[in-house]
Image 1 (tube, rainbow, N blue to C red):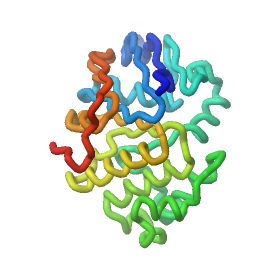
Image 2 (image 1 turned 180 degrees about the vertical axis):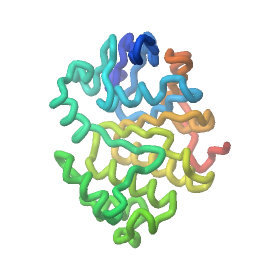
Image 3 (image 1 turned 90 degrees about the vertical axis):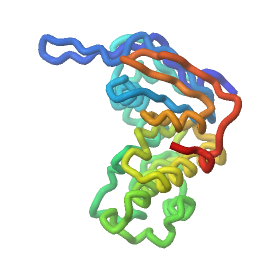
Image 4 (image 1 turned 45 degrees about the horizontal axis):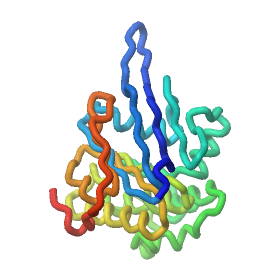
Length: 235
């Protein structure tokens, strides 16, 4: 595997609030190989979401350099960042962010239109086990079903990179494991690089790479040789 599909080099992020400077990330450096599942773990306020937002092109850094698939994302202008978010990155959020007045199928179709080589929306919904729920609105779906729609929406773009912000945080244990299994399978079958941020240390066992974050800095980076199937995880 290429060790630098994603590379952070001495990344710093400072937020300016009035006369106060808040350093969210400090001297962050790490790499992730193509096709890996990487779990970034840390407590609330550790800087995980800031890190994910910068990688996804939703925020900018203060200092340093970020490359993805050989391109310096941190140097993109707003137009190039928009194209990057639209075509290269899939997002899965903790609270789904589905459009309430669109059906499950329509939510996925809307995302599919954004990609360069998108998958068929109905086919992707079937892959996540929601073929029979395609015509339902989000309010008619359980939390787990809504999260599966959100994952289908991200996968429909056929992104290079799937970014997941606490994807099981709002779900019960069994539903959460179903979602993680879906993410693990999607990574293995499609060769996608998956980044999961979480405070749940049990998820580290399913990862190829674990990055531990504390107070805006990298505590450790571990390349794991033995990956645990999601079915065997317990927390």
